[in-house]
Length: 354
Image (cartoon, rainbow, N blue to C red; front, top):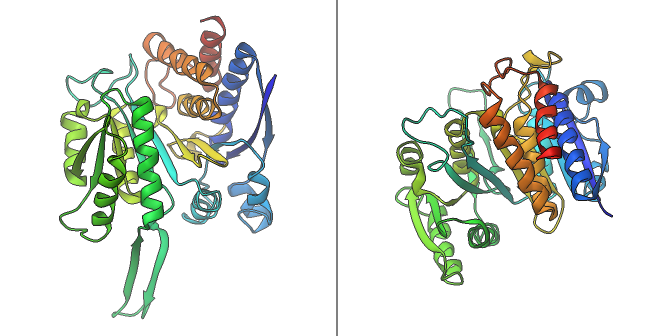
C-alpha cells in the first residue's frame, strides 16, 4: 500500500477545527482508494510563538523537507502583532521550501450563491497560477530617515528570468493538462510597469512558442478585475506575478461564493508543497464548532491530486459539490445548517458511499 508522509500545522483560531474535518475526509479517501496517509502534527502558530518566543524552531524547515506535503489550517492570533506569524511561517516556508507556484482554482459549485448576476457554475470555473516567491513579496527595500517628516520608504519588485520562466512554464503545462479552452491569459500592467512586465511578456511568448496548442492571451490587471466580474467565463487559466495574483485570487474567492469554499496550494513541483484554506483563522468563532470546513476539505483534495491520487481527489471534489448542491444552506459560519463536524461527516459519508 502506498503511503505518504503529511506534516499537519493546524495553526490558530478555527484552524484546528477545519484541519480536523479535512483529515476526516482525507482518511476516508485513503480507506476507499487503498493508500495510507501518515500525519505528523506540528504546533507552530500563535500559541507556540507566545510560549517559545520564536515562530519556528531551528531545524523546522529541514524537517518539513522530509514530508511529501504540508496540510495547513490557518495562521493569525489576536495576541500576536499582524505580520509576525504571516512572515515567519507562511512567507518563510514558501521561500525556504521554494514553493514558487501558488495555485488557486476559482470554481463555483452547484448550490452555492455568487454575487454575480446571471452567472453560474458553467461561467465561473478557471484557475489562477500565481508566482509565489518573487515580486514585491521578496522583501527588497528599506527606509530612509524613518520616523521623520522626510521619511522615504522603498519596496522593490524583484522579477528574475528564472523565476518568471519557471512560473510560466508551469502555467503552460497546467493549461495543457487541465485547461478546458486551452487558453492561458497573462495578467500584467505592461503600459505602466514597463520593466517588470516587459520581462514577463517576452518570456510569456518565448515559452509559449513551445506550446503551440495553447492560445496566448493578455490583459492588464485592472481589466482582469473588471472581466472577472462581468464575464468570468472568458478565462481558462490566468498566470501572473505575486502581488497581482494575491489581489485577483481574493476577488476570485468572492465570485465563487466566499472564503468558506476557497482553497489553494503552494507548490514546489520537485519538493514539499503546502495546501491550505484561503480564509483566515477567524478567532472569534474558535471552539464553537460553527466554522465552515469546506475550504480545508477542498485543500485536502488538491493535496491528493498533487500527490498523484487523482481519482481520490476527483471524488473528494465531487462529494463536496454534492453536499453543496443538496445540503448546505450557506457558506457562512453558523449559517450552514450544520455544525463544523457535521459538515465533515456529510462529505466523508458521501465520499464513502457515493
